[in-house]
Image: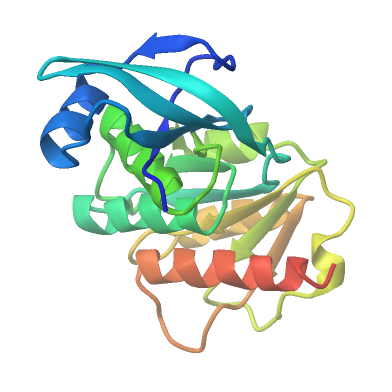
Length: 236
């Protein structure tokens, strides 16, 4: 399988491009490719087979040869996740991307210990996960938002799928129909406060559901919830 790299700028067949310092270092020093080597570049418009036409230690130029994959529709699954510490947050970003979400919304709630997210680092993680998982479009990562503001501005033509530790309802096919998007809401370590939970359940677009009889870590809950929605969507 060819090396796949994300190219955010437009790609035109038979055009050439000078690569970024990061891609140049990767190609020259990590993968040790040579002039004439093939690799693929992709973005939201598709994927192109490419050839290295010039290479030295600090400059790589490629030619885009032919389009080999067409763009796909954007995923309508989103994840709204209360921030957690660095290592589990990295796992969440990576696995949510691999499982095909279209948007990641970082949230601060009353019991959220972490209040900020390094957006540049987060984007790098999701781009690498997109490259690895044979997808074309890295998920959008929004600015960090407070839970109350998220609920206030939530588009009610979408569905808010609330992974609620107190719920006994299971998610069904009908719960995922007739919605512009499906936004999975995962709480912080220690769960939402009673006041926050009440605010969530008041939202007209909300569908609370159970994930497990056990208490799950945030990263485990994210993987389980997205996998469940993906599984149900396959029958929808």
